[in-house]
Length: 212
Image (cartoon, rainbow, N blue to C red; front, side):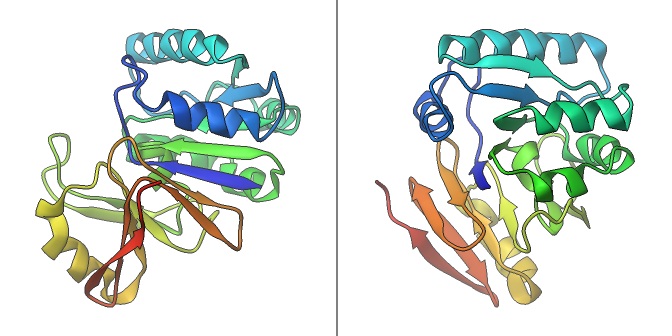
């Protein structure tokens, strides 16, 4: 299993096209990508996300399928097992976590042998703890249990203005801060980076990965 943690980017403008292309190439020429559109409770937004991602990923050579949160766990498990890539999109991480817990998604992803791509909110929930820092959507920072696929945390849409808060949050956890259009790649043992990633640990900030 390899996990791509994306810091975010405009999907409509296809700002992370190169990252997705690289992730797909790791699997095969025409990977089966399963999207979990569980980051919103709005059916209108969900259908719009699905249309954008389907066109985007098909243009990159993928076969795109969807697992709806309304489907039985057995059907979601079948779709996961027959996919090459699992894609968790951006949106609201707490909404995604609510759906994911009900479907025991953490157990499924821990056993998955392909590539997992978590973009923004999708990256946050893969961690031991899901750090939802203050932004336009959330008035205060919230820490909730994540899926625990990895034992560290990530910060997405990283902005240096949050450094002091991240230093404080890092006193008892490792936080990898990922700017937009950048990615942290983890295979269970080793890391790779696309763009410059920062590590916050024990109250200090370090440059973790130089730009490539």
